[in-house]
Length: 164
Image 1 (cartoon, rainbow, N blue to C red):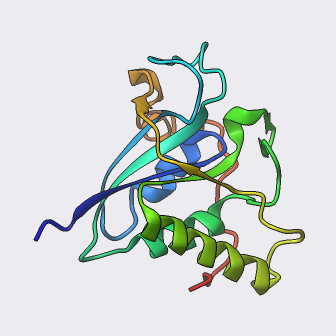
Image 2 (cartoon, rainbow, N blue to C red):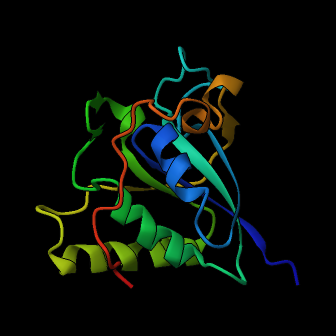
């Protein structure tokens, strides 16, 4: 049985999310890119409607989609619409791109748990969007904070414990 899976999420600038997820148990690979938008072959300068997203390749025998979402809601502010830190616009929206009914069900449940926890002021604004093509970003955006350790990020662990 193949336990290697992929998950697609967006939560603001993709650099910070990639940097934090890359070291999580069970994460095999990370790639930043564009998802959920209007054009094919988007670029950093031309990605209308696309979110700056991340493709996570993970080993489901070590971590789960639910655990990925749990961490996702700990490292960005899911209550802001089209914004993370200084970044504003739909490119920086909080979104989960589900690939099947089970992922959608898990996302709905985790969002409810996040809302019920009261850890965030306000309700989760994260959108649930069906998976569309994930377009990898340009090479200069991949592993950006590893190559530029003083680069900009608004992502950090906000809570010691999660929601599941």
